[in-house]
Image (cartoon, rainbow, N blue to C red; front, side):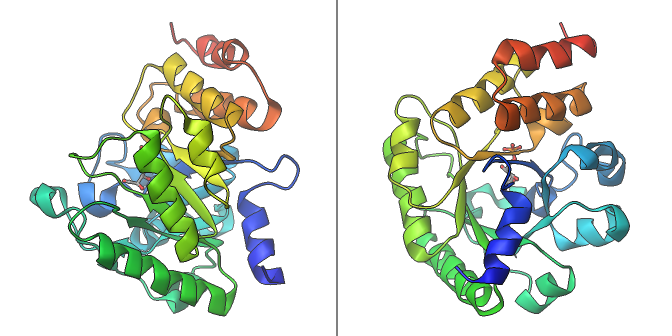
Length: 263
Ligand code: R5P
C-alpha cells in the first residue's frame, strides 16, 4: 500500500486503536428520505464530533455538511437503483467519477456488491473499476456486501461475499454481523472488516451487536439506523465509541445511553 493510501486509511481506521466508528448516512441514495434522515443536516451535525468518518453520497455532503466541520469522508460511488424497484436493487452502476471524489477530498470511496444476485457480475466489475481508480490515486475502497432479500446472512454467505470483495481488491469491507461463526468470516477475509448495524434494534441490543462483532475481530462499525433512528443518537454513538475504542463492556456502554434517559 502506498503512502497516500495508508495515510487516507489511517484517517478512518484510527492508528491509536486500529479501530473505527464510522457513521453511515448514505441510505437516501436508494431509499429517499429514510426515517431519521429527512433533514440530514439536522440529524448529522450533532453526531459529527463523535464519528471517525462519515459515509454518505456527494449530494448530501455538498448540501448538508460544512467543509470546515467534516470528519474524514467515505464517499458512496454506486447507485442507479431505488426502493420502487425492489427486484432490481442489485442493478447498480458507478455514479461518481474518481475526480469528483478527489475534489471532495474523500478519504475513501465505497460501493455495494451483490454476490449471488442477478447482477453480481456487474457489481463486482464496478468494484474492480473503483479499485483500479483508487489504486491510481491512492484512495482506499470500501466494499459493502449488500444482501438481497432472498439470501441468508449466514457465515457461509457473508464469508464468501467478503472474500470476493477482498480478492477483487477492496481495501476494507463492510458486512453484517452473523451468528454463529462471525469470527470465521473475519478469518477468511485478508482485509479489515467493519459491520453495518442493520435495522433499528433496542439500544442495548445494538450495543451488544457492536461488542460481539469487535470481540470476534471486526475492526469497528459503520453504523447508521441504530444511531440516527435512536431517541438518543449522541449517547448511542458515544456508547459505541466506548466499546470500539476503549474495550468497554455492554453494561458500561449502556450506562451512557441510560444516563440520557433510555430505559
Ligand atoms: C445501505 O443503505 C448503506 O450502505 C448503509 O450505509 C448501511 O446499510 C449501514 O447502515 P445501517 O447501520 O443502517 O445498516
